[in-house]
Image 1 (cartoon, helix red, strand yellow):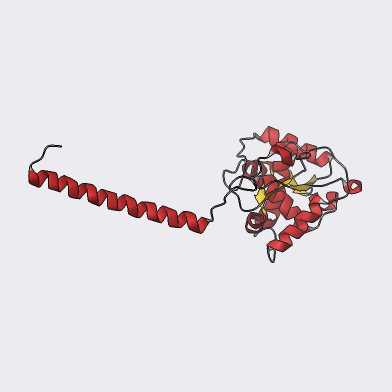
Image 2 (cartoon, rainbow, N blue to C red; image 1 turned 60 degrees about the horizontal axis):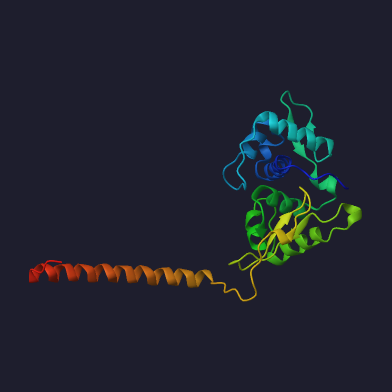
Length: 221
């Protein structure tokens, strides 16, 4: 289906509904209070929001008009569920990846594999990349691409992915690493930090030795 771009809060609400449906099924569907707490979570969220219940209510109502969410029946308290997979004709793997991107911002394939562990367990990174490639190549008659691969950022070893449920992302807006740029592996950085720490310790030892010599010789510094 083709739909308008989602606002930041609408995307956050949709991502939370997907996440909580899989991580806390006993508490799902979510009440407005639980949904608001999930939107304003300070962990595993980028950016961190401070939305009011009224703002979250407005966002979930907007998602209902797009058939991306609905209100469950049979409860005295209003509770909400997502309908993302059915509304967008997506498999559960793609839903998990998009939800994570909506909650955490751009991620590499390896980061996504780790971050989606509780939503869907991918066999390996190539499996993650396969579903991302499908989202990026989604034909226009089905609503167009829902994910895009960003240029490799300076100092990064992998390219990140972003969702496009909030509108098309322009990859050129992100800084790309130059071909000649040197990328230092994490192992080399750790070794460098170790050598710096050893050098600092040796310097402190030598300073102590010099201070002692000045004292023994009665020399004023």
